[in-house]
Length: 411
Ligand SMILES: Cc1cc2nc3c(=O)[nH]c(=O)nc-3n(C[C@H](O)[C@H](O)[C@H](O)COP(=O)(O)OP(=O)(O)OC[C@H]3O[C@@H](n4cnc5c(N)ncnc54)[C@H](O)[C@@H]3O)c2cc1C
Image 1 (cartoon, rainbow, N blue to C red):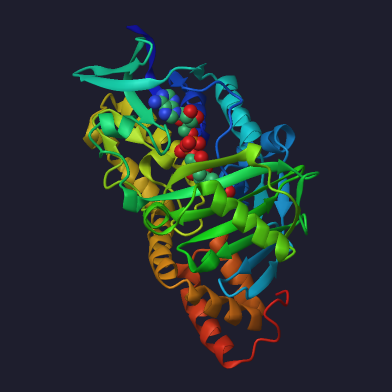
Image 2 (tube, rainbow, N blue to C red):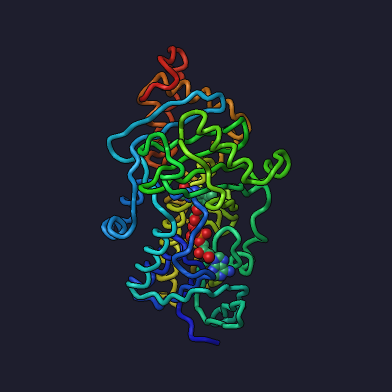
């Protein structure tokens, strides 16, 4: 048994780095292990809500100086018929960045505040004893912990080892594609506008083009069950078709570069039924904390990493690490993001069942500037849907009785 720590965090993505950073800043002895060496890439669009700055103000200066961040003030939303609207805002809606840089910066920050980080350690097993947990790696190393935080992503082992499920079912997963390509090869028509095609081709999913400072990131996402049952061809076929369509529509110029292409799974069916167990908390993708219709998960990973760490630190201070002592984690994340996640699943089910509904919404948005901006702000996490529900419903009804001036007019 190697010397471990009071808390061993498995996974060094945004969830794990945030957890380790929070624990170490509170003086809790923390070891983070990741199977990869950093900087490592994570297949991702690299878009994150602007609200991340409000939620983690202590990171704003650090991130602005260590990561190349592009601020987005315009979003074009398109429906399956091709109807689209452009929402604009004075304050940024969204930030785009490269995950290689962002994840490495968060992990470096966790190290700097005192977390011990070991790379190239793939965890395969947890063994529970009365006084702690043994975290076993594939190379035979074993690390002792009083609490384990599972931040090991969509294919994680910690939740399974803790009896929190057998992994995400087919119906709870999406397949998302991405390529991050240099602007010299593939460029958005407007470097300040993100483009989102909901219900692309009438499929249950979306396509996106996210401009970054020196790159563009683009891809498609579909429910995995739909992809397996209804679509022919490898993921790149659909990815390349989306980019060819986007080029034909003037959204991008240049060519897709298959060398930069990746496809990866994304949990899109909502959080696990339980996200804590004896001596274990799970956060980020490992626990299914992803917005059900936008596929946004970085922010939720950071929030749940922080909340898991706060719960663990308090439990350690009380000297109680069992499930009962960790149960407050669920109340914390439900209070902060539970409503958004539940609403996002409802929206996902409606939009994915009837993609044409997206066209109806977009046409209404084209007729009402405020509705358009509100929809964009809700989709990008800047507004709470329930707080705006009445206004959205009234504006939607009103807009449907007015003629849209032009489906593509900015709002
Ligand atoms: C194509 C695509 C596009 C996306 N676009 C966006 C987007 O634009 N915006 C957004 O917010 N979200 C997006 N997401 C979702 C987002 O990428 C995830 O929600 C986010 O990365 C979750 O962070 P995490 O820390 O929970 O997990 P991850 O970032 O997956 O990190 C998990 C870490 O655990 C490590 N690990 C895994 N297993 C083990 C093990 N056994 N032992 C040790 N270490 C292990 C991995 O190496 C990894 O470093 C996208 C996802 C995909 C697939």
